[in-house]
Amino acid sequence: MSRLIALLLGLLIAVPLAHASPTLWRGEWPRTDFARTTVGDWSEIRSGGPPGDGIPAIDSPPFLRASSETRIKGNEPVMTLEIGGQTPRAYPIRYRMWHEIVADAAGGLPVAVTCCPLCNSAMTFDRRVRGQVPSFGVSGKLRHSGRVMYDRQTESWWQQAIGEGIVGRMTGVKLKTPPSWMESWDQFRRRNPDGLVMAEPAFNRSYGHNPYRGCDSLSGPFLYDGENPPRGIPPLERVVRVGDRAWPLTRVREEGGVTEAGVTISWEAGQVSARDAGSISGGRDVGTVRVRDAQGRDLAHDVMFAFAFHAVWPQGRWMIR
Image 1 (spheres, rainbow, N blue to C red):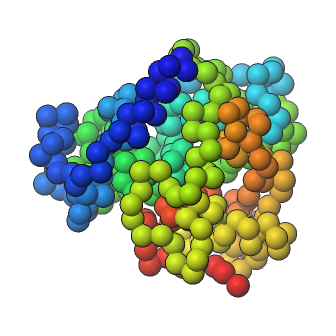
Image 2 (image 1 turned 45 degrees about the vertical axis):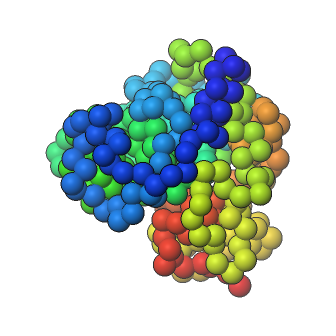
């Protein structure tokens, strides 16, 4: 398995940086309507190495009771989804790093639990679109070093970080984002001892191993040649994104939390970086963020790298003091 990962990473490194054109992709994506797009410069999109579905998505995964799960280390990150009246669910990053998209139906709500290891984005989307429930896969393409998803019904392309169609018949369509957040496995199961956790997928993968070791401590973003963030913010600084605003995680952590612009952002130690050490559980502690409104309700947010926020929201607001 380690040889396969080395091959995939080798492909990533070997990807040409030449400008791209949809002409090169029509053979691979014959059903995609490239005439419909919000992409103004096709050089923003490039191959990430593996082809479409080379990173397989997971559909309708089985779950275990939190009390019966023994493989996950307490400091490992999980994506938590708590829908009112439904049993809370945890989606471990040890599986999602290798699959990136998990399609589920949580309490009757069809969701796509997504992540992008290269830009550190992790978002959950409501999959209902125009009266249908499309399924999503990994296209193998990147935009600004961020994952591009596709839907299997129209083969439109979607920017993972924002859940918006950028190429094809679904161009301009935005998916809704139910609140979810990344926290440690210990934090989830202490609060939800009877909760559910996604079971290990039936794939031959080194789950618990980090195929993106050192990704968040490079000198610059991987496969990204865009503009760096303003004000001297390091491109691989984690930021808490709420809408089009971004709070540097260093500020949130140093101030013990932030309340402004109608939101309260809290921080708690105990969750490690999944992109640091060779094993996920061996990463350095980056902590857990929760974002709530003035009524104490959880809000959809993301904890992504600063370069990715700036690339997707070039006019976004930087919440710096």
